[in-house]
Image 1: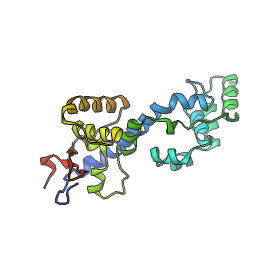
Image 2 (image 1 turned 90 degrees about the vertical axis):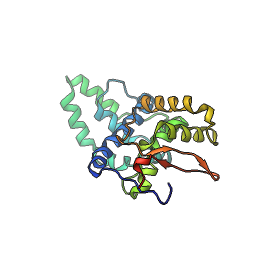
Image 3 (image 1 turned 135 degrees about the horizontal axis):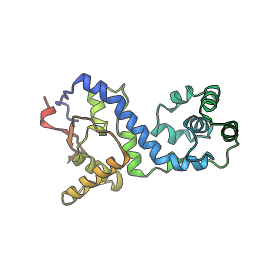
Image 4 (image 1 turned 120 degrees about the vertical axis):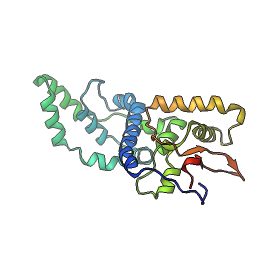
Amino acid sequence: MPRNTTIQYPTALLKEERPLIRESVQKALLKLTAGGYQKSLRLLPDDPTPLYQWRLKKAPWDNKAGDSLWPDKTAYFENITLRNVVEQLTRQAECDEQLEQWLRRLLAPFGRHVDRLAQVGKVQRFLITHWIAPDNYPLPRFFGESLCFYSNHALAQLLHLCQWGKPLPATRLGTAEKTAAKVVERLGLRRAKLGIIREMPFIDGRFVPLPYEARRV
């Protein structure tokens, strides 16, 4: 982002939006991987969430892929204990037979585990990984590295770069914008209410994020 650019964004709105945007990223990730994980974790589609959470925690993770797409997963799993899971399953079971089936799957040995996170498509992985930056980033960097603040125009330019490694031709911009919007919509990623980055032109051999004039001071 240009050095002489300052981004103005309502503090209260940003505080309200951050957790909602992060939640949409987690839901998108689950949407992409749930079906595959059910198979590799030996679960059924209707199995309860606590059972799914415990099996996911005990699965042999590929930490490199997992950390890049779900950086806070370690903290998430710390709150999931066997005792709590069993208690939740006991409350949810309609009969002893159902509880017994759940407990068998809960403690069943794992077969060959496939890291579904590593199989997410290139564009989808790029969007999910960069949709919102860590909260500890200083605001100028936070806005510049969070795609939730980008217009479809800017996203189209970035996604073309991600796929082909070169600038998006102007003649393909309209179609590329529609495609970018559809990908975001299908993933269910939540956008920030106020857009910041208008476009990403290729200037002097590099891509430069340019904000809307209303966001420039």
